Amino acid sequence: MEGIKAFFSGLNDILLKMTWLSDLFRRLVEDVFGLSVEERIGGSIHFFLYDTVKIFLLLSALIFTVSYIQSFFPPERTRAILGRFNGVGANLLGALLGTITPFCSCSSIPLFIGFTSAGLPIGVTFSFLISSPLVDLASILLLASIFNWRIALAYVVVGIVLATIGGTLISKLKLEKHVEPFVYANKLTEVDMPEQTFRDRLLFARDQVRDIVHKVWLYVLIGVGIGAAIHNWIPEDLITAVLGSSNFFSVPLATLAGAPMYADIFGTLPIAEALVGKGVGIGTVLAFMMAVTALSLPSMVLLKKVVKTKLLVIFAGIVLVGILVIGYTFNALSYLLI
Image 1 (cartoon, helix red, strand yellow):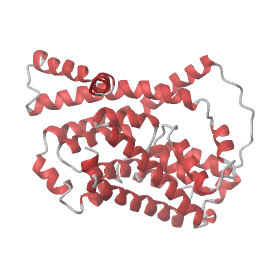
Image 2 (image 1 turned 135 degrees about the horizontal axis):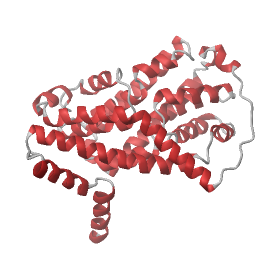
Image 3 (image 1 turned 90 degrees about the vertical axis):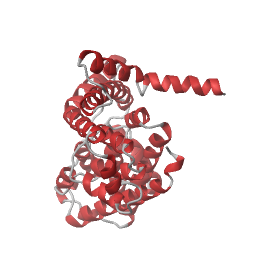
Image 4 (image 1 turned 90 degrees about the horizontal axis):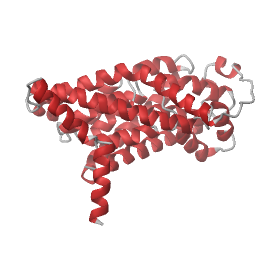
């Protein structure tokens, strides 16, 4: 048993954590730049180079794989699948389908409009809208590469649960009249989608990699830069005093700090890594990540264009309360995850 665990641990270090890449950049910083990675400048350069290259390598490989899978679920087919279910099961399915769409919150809103105009219950479309930016298949491996599998799987599970509960509550409140009328008026014409060949799917996956990397590269660099600054320049005592588990208000503070930002999970991971390294509770870190991806101010502004104020406030309130509950719960149970 120990041999099997050692094998998978080594495989994880090579493929996900890429310890060989960390060692490579360590030698580059120390031998070529003449800096020590134990000092601030050398450590910042090492953190920035290693995390940037690792994230883009994993991101490209994972988006290619996820996009190939996604090619079997175009919007028309997704709407058809969702239309066969109702109740909590439909909300759960909407949340699960959101996990195979690697979109940021603003990119998910056009699909939300399409699903709603096609006649799907708004609760189902809101479950999709919550889970799509919050959780995707790529995030599981990226989280595992930075933290561990327990944290990665826990994040995905709570994201899907939050999306399912949020959509179910919105369904129960019967808020259809609070969607802007033009959404319902924008009826989509059903078209027969040609069957894709293996080559078509490979080309689609390649184009998705190029398109998504083009959209997120700046946010990844900004996130890695902030992570490097937190990791090497901001005193640990200051961070733990503000966001440490001993501070009862750390979870709402992290949520408020994340909400004005606009990024996807790939841009928040380096910041989360640095915060955990400074002793911030895992629940506080998850609250920050969820606020950035699900409650970002730009996405709220865009969503306001398609729903009325009451529905927007209810949606934001449900997600906010869910994030706070998740944050406090995971801080209390962090000993099971770290």
